[in-house]
Image (tube, rainbow, N blue to C red; front, top):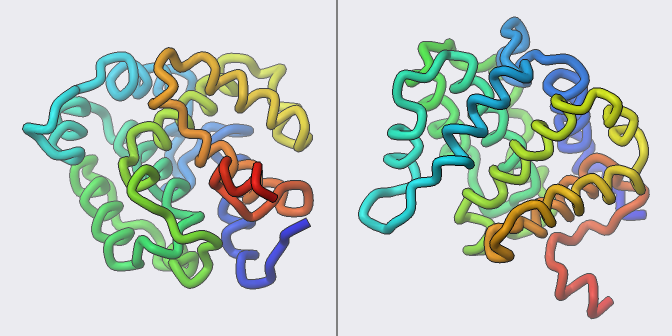
Length: 213
Protein backbone atom coordinates (compact mmCIF):
# COMPACT_ATOMS: atom_id res chain seq x y z
CA UNK A 1 0.00 0.00 0.00
CA UNK A 2 2.63 2.55 1.03
CA UNK A 3 5.96 0.76 0.85
CA UNK A 4 8.92 3.03 0.05
CA UNK A 5 12.32 1.90 -1.17
CA UNK A 6 14.09 4.37 1.13
CA UNK A 7 12.29 2.83 4.12
CA UNK A 8 13.51 -0.72 3.50
CA UNK A 9 16.10 -0.42 6.32
CA UNK A 10 13.24 0.52 8.68
CA UNK A 11 11.13 -2.47 7.66
CA UNK A 12 14.14 -4.75 8.10
CA UNK A 13 14.95 -3.30 11.54
CA UNK A 14 11.33 -3.74 12.66
CA UNK A 15 11.32 -7.34 11.50
CA UNK A 16 14.63 -7.90 13.30
CA UNK A 17 13.01 -6.61 16.50
CA UNK A 18 10.19 -9.12 16.06
CA UNK A 19 12.54 -11.99 15.25
CA UNK A 20 15.14 -11.39 17.94
CA UNK A 21 13.13 -9.92 20.81
CA UNK A 22 9.65 -11.40 20.44
CA UNK A 23 10.04 -14.71 18.64
CA UNK A 24 13.27 -15.45 20.47
CA UNK A 25 14.50 -13.61 23.55
CA UNK A 26 17.71 -11.96 22.37
CA UNK A 27 18.45 -8.26 22.28
CA UNK A 28 18.06 -6.38 19.01
CA UNK A 29 21.23 -4.30 19.51
CA UNK A 30 23.20 -6.85 21.56
CA UNK A 31 22.10 -10.17 19.99
CA UNK A 32 24.53 -12.19 22.09
CA UNK A 33 22.40 -11.43 25.17
CA UNK A 34 19.21 -13.31 26.09
CA UNK A 35 17.60 -10.12 27.32
CA UNK A 36 13.94 -10.45 26.31
CA UNK A 37 12.97 -13.34 28.58
CA UNK A 38 9.52 -13.22 30.18
CA UNK A 39 11.16 -12.62 33.56
CA UNK A 40 13.07 -9.60 32.25
CA UNK A 41 10.07 -8.19 30.37
CA UNK A 42 7.99 -8.54 33.53
CA UNK A 43 10.65 -6.83 35.64
CA UNK A 44 11.05 -3.92 33.22
CA UNK A 45 7.27 -3.54 33.11
CA UNK A 46 7.18 -3.46 36.93
CA UNK A 47 9.81 -0.74 37.09
CA UNK A 48 8.86 1.36 34.09
CA UNK A 49 5.08 1.06 33.79
CA UNK A 50 3.65 -0.27 37.04
CA UNK A 51 5.59 2.27 39.12
CA UNK A 52 5.57 5.51 37.10
CA UNK A 53 7.25 8.65 38.36
CA UNK A 54 4.94 11.61 37.93
CA UNK A 55 5.86 15.29 37.94
CA UNK A 56 7.87 17.90 36.09
CA UNK A 57 10.58 18.41 38.70
CA UNK A 58 12.80 15.79 37.03
CA UNK A 59 13.53 15.00 33.39
CA UNK A 60 12.55 11.83 31.57
CA UNK A 61 16.14 10.55 31.76
CA UNK A 62 16.40 11.33 35.47
CA UNK A 63 13.18 9.43 36.16
CA UNK A 64 14.41 6.56 34.03
CA UNK A 65 17.65 6.35 36.01
CA UNK A 66 15.65 6.19 39.24
CA UNK A 67 13.31 3.53 37.90
CA UNK A 68 16.19 1.36 36.73
CA UNK A 69 18.48 1.89 39.72
CA UNK A 70 20.27 -1.40 40.37
CA UNK A 71 18.80 -3.03 37.25
CA UNK A 72 20.64 -5.77 35.40
CA UNK A 73 22.48 -5.19 32.13
CA UNK A 74 19.71 -7.07 30.34
CA UNK A 75 17.12 -4.48 31.38
CA UNK A 76 19.31 -1.66 30.06
CA UNK A 77 19.75 -3.62 26.81
CA UNK A 78 15.98 -3.97 26.50
CA UNK A 79 15.55 -0.26 27.04
CA UNK A 80 18.12 0.42 24.32
CA UNK A 81 16.17 -1.83 21.97
CA UNK A 82 12.92 -0.03 22.82
CA UNK A 83 14.51 3.36 22.16
CA UNK A 84 15.85 2.09 18.83
CA UNK A 85 12.38 0.96 17.68
CA UNK A 86 10.83 4.17 19.02
CA UNK A 87 13.20 6.19 16.81
CA UNK A 88 12.48 4.25 13.59
CA UNK A 89 9.51 6.27 12.25
CA UNK A 90 10.91 9.73 12.89
CA UNK A 91 12.63 12.00 10.39
CA UNK A 92 12.79 14.69 13.10
CA UNK A 93 15.02 12.94 15.65
CA UNK A 94 18.53 13.17 14.25
CA UNK A 95 21.23 10.53 14.26
CA UNK A 96 23.60 12.10 16.84
CA UNK A 97 20.80 12.24 19.39
CA UNK A 98 19.87 8.61 18.72
CA UNK A 99 23.44 7.45 19.12
CA UNK A 100 24.09 9.52 22.24
CA UNK A 101 20.96 8.22 23.95
CA UNK A 102 21.61 4.55 23.23
CA UNK A 103 25.28 4.84 24.12
CA UNK A 104 24.29 6.44 27.42
CA UNK A 105 22.00 3.50 28.16
CA UNK A 106 24.75 1.07 27.18
CA UNK A 107 27.13 2.80 29.58
CA UNK A 108 24.55 2.61 32.38
CA UNK A 109 24.20 -1.11 31.82
CA UNK A 110 27.89 -1.85 31.38
CA UNK A 111 27.29 -2.78 27.75
CA UNK A 112 29.56 -2.18 24.76
CA UNK A 113 28.54 0.23 22.02
CA UNK A 114 26.24 -1.50 19.50
CA UNK A 115 27.67 -2.67 16.20
CA UNK A 116 28.14 0.45 13.98
CA UNK A 117 25.93 -1.09 11.29
CA UNK A 118 22.82 -0.35 13.38
CA UNK A 119 23.25 3.37 12.69
CA UNK A 120 22.57 2.86 9.00
CA UNK A 121 18.91 3.28 9.93
CA UNK A 122 18.86 7.04 10.42
CA UNK A 123 16.49 9.99 10.13
CA UNK A 124 16.93 10.03 6.37
CA UNK A 125 15.12 6.67 6.38
CA UNK A 126 12.21 7.80 8.58
CA UNK A 127 8.76 8.17 7.11
CA UNK A 128 7.11 10.88 9.22
CA UNK A 129 7.99 14.11 10.99
CA UNK A 130 7.06 13.39 14.59
CA UNK A 131 5.70 16.06 16.92
CA UNK A 132 5.59 16.99 20.60
CA UNK A 133 3.19 14.24 21.66
CA UNK A 134 5.38 11.55 20.14
CA UNK A 135 8.51 13.07 21.66
CA UNK A 136 7.01 12.65 25.15
CA UNK A 137 8.29 9.05 24.86
CA UNK A 138 6.51 7.51 27.83
CA UNK A 139 3.30 6.34 26.18
CA UNK A 140 5.06 5.16 23.01
CA UNK A 141 7.57 3.12 25.01
CA UNK A 142 4.84 1.79 27.26
CA UNK A 143 3.01 0.42 24.23
CA UNK A 144 6.16 -1.24 22.89
CA UNK A 145 6.84 -2.89 26.24
CA UNK A 146 3.22 -3.93 26.84
CA UNK A 147 3.10 -5.35 23.31
CA UNK A 148 6.20 -7.43 24.10
CA UNK A 149 4.74 -8.48 27.47
CA UNK A 150 1.56 -9.69 25.78
CA UNK A 151 3.49 -11.77 23.25
CA UNK A 152 6.09 -13.13 25.68
CA UNK A 153 3.50 -14.08 28.32
CA UNK A 154 1.13 -15.71 25.79
CA UNK A 155 3.29 -17.76 23.37
CA UNK A 156 0.19 -18.77 21.39
CA UNK A 157 -0.09 -15.13 20.31
CA UNK A 158 3.13 -15.40 18.29
CA UNK A 159 1.02 -16.20 15.23
CA UNK A 160 -0.27 -12.61 15.18
CA UNK A 161 3.20 -11.37 14.28
CA UNK A 162 2.68 -12.75 10.78
CA UNK A 163 -0.89 -11.55 10.33
CA UNK A 164 -1.61 -7.82 9.79
CA UNK A 165 -5.25 -8.02 10.92
CA UNK A 166 -4.54 -10.08 14.03
CA UNK A 167 -1.69 -7.76 14.97
CA UNK A 168 -4.04 -4.79 14.72
CA UNK A 169 -6.50 -6.52 17.06
CA UNK A 170 -3.75 -7.35 19.55
CA UNK A 171 -2.40 -3.79 19.59
CA UNK A 172 -5.89 -2.37 20.02
CA UNK A 173 -6.41 -4.73 22.97
CA UNK A 174 -3.17 -3.54 24.54
CA UNK A 175 -4.23 0.10 24.11
CA UNK A 176 -7.64 -0.57 25.63
CA UNK A 177 -5.94 -2.11 28.68
CA UNK A 178 -4.28 1.23 29.51
CA UNK A 179 -6.66 3.04 31.90
CA UNK A 180 -6.00 6.67 30.93
CA UNK A 181 -6.74 7.57 27.31
CA UNK A 182 -3.97 10.18 27.33
CA UNK A 183 -1.47 7.36 27.90
CA UNK A 184 -2.63 5.33 24.92
CA UNK A 185 -0.02 5.70 22.18
CA UNK A 186 -2.24 5.41 19.13
CA UNK A 187 0.54 7.00 17.07
CA UNK A 188 2.92 4.14 17.96
CA UNK A 189 0.15 1.68 17.17
CA UNK A 190 -0.11 3.16 13.67
CA UNK A 191 3.68 3.21 13.29
CA UNK A 192 4.10 -0.44 14.29
CA UNK A 193 1.42 -1.61 11.89
CA UNK A 194 3.05 0.29 9.06
CA UNK A 195 6.68 -0.72 9.62
CA UNK A 196 5.73 -4.39 10.11
CA UNK A 197 3.19 -4.50 7.26
CA UNK A 198 3.91 -1.64 4.83
CA UNK A 199 1.85 -3.33 2.11
CA UNK A 200 -1.24 -3.35 4.31
CA UNK A 201 -1.22 -0.07 6.27
CA UNK A 202 -0.82 3.62 5.50
CA UNK A 203 2.37 5.59 6.11
CA UNK A 204 0.55 7.77 8.65
CA UNK A 205 0.69 7.92 12.46
CA UNK A 206 -2.01 10.57 12.93
CA UNK A 207 -5.52 9.24 13.61
CA UNK A 208 -7.02 12.56 12.48
CA UNK A 209 -5.19 12.35 9.14
CA UNK A 210 -6.40 8.77 8.65
CA UNK A 211 -9.98 9.86 9.32
CA UNK A 212 -9.71 12.79 6.92
CA UNK A 213 -8.46 10.51 4.17
